[in-house]
Image (tube, helix red, strand yellow):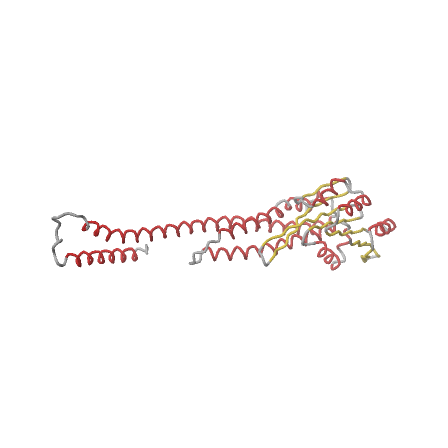
Length: 325
């Protein structure tokens, strides 16, 4: 648990790290107007979240969402507390897979509580950005929400570039001259893109609401949320295009597999025709009739063999010229 108090000191904003939530809340109550507290939790236990919920007056349903960590991106309001759920994503280079987690943000009049689960903790990057921009904390707890959204959406953008690179590599392999079956890899990337889409798509209307006048944020905060809304909209468009392109790559690969099968069948049919011709001639002269032409001729056998070889050679050349062999 990390507790940071942001307070006004004349024209400047200062931050103070406090040990323990009880001490932080006590200092918050004695602080001047414009001060707010940010409490950060990473993979907390249920009792830890429930204890904080009692101190901050959070709704039981909001606490349940924070503990279970299986929520779609959404926003809920419980009295004067706003609850926002986000999906955090990380790209694993070794496996080219996307791992997901969750971040919950609770905003009250003078506090912000973030609860993060999973491999990625966007609250760390959000805190760094707040420290780099002294003017942002002047917006109050809403600055925490913006910083967390901004950090999360920037991660989405970076992951979209990685997935685009994986897809480009698959495209090259599908259309290469080598016969390589990549269906399993296409389906694997398809699953990653679907997980990506489940994180981004529901977040679009949430961020758009924050960027509008109905959000209730201070007027000076709206441009920041409009910037985030633009970024998440672009990422959503990119994910949709990746999904559609993956479908096209899959169709192209299946078509190529069908072409390979047709080529194999043509090759088999060509060789079958070549072997069928000498079989026909041998079968004809293998019949046991007493009065067959050339049976008593000295050159009958060499001629039959020569006809077989010549006919097979002509067929082989014809099939090679037509691309069947």
